[in-house]
Length: 109
Image (cartoon, rainbow, N blue to C red):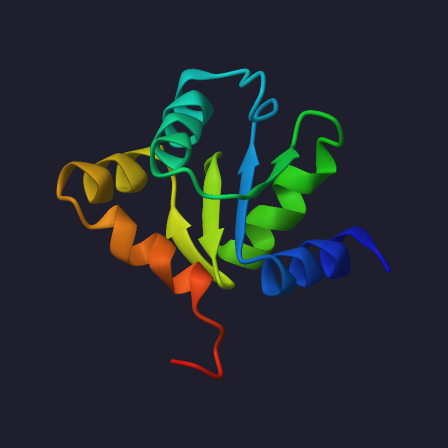
């Protein structure tokens, strides 16, 4: 499986996945940290992928998502967006609705 296929597979098979600079334990930029803080606020489990380990991930991810910036949050295979969108959803108290989608399997919706 090449990198593009791996990214597609991970996004489609992981309920909540965050592509970020650094790790959820040690974010390496303020935007990534902001998204980690929001996800931690809701106490959800999620997979983090450090794009700094393999720089090509950023290029392949942006080709897949058509979104140029990092971080990128996906819930049930859908791109939610970056830090600005996550913060906006959180501030409007809409983020919980987005995250609840990850707790409902597609066959239940």
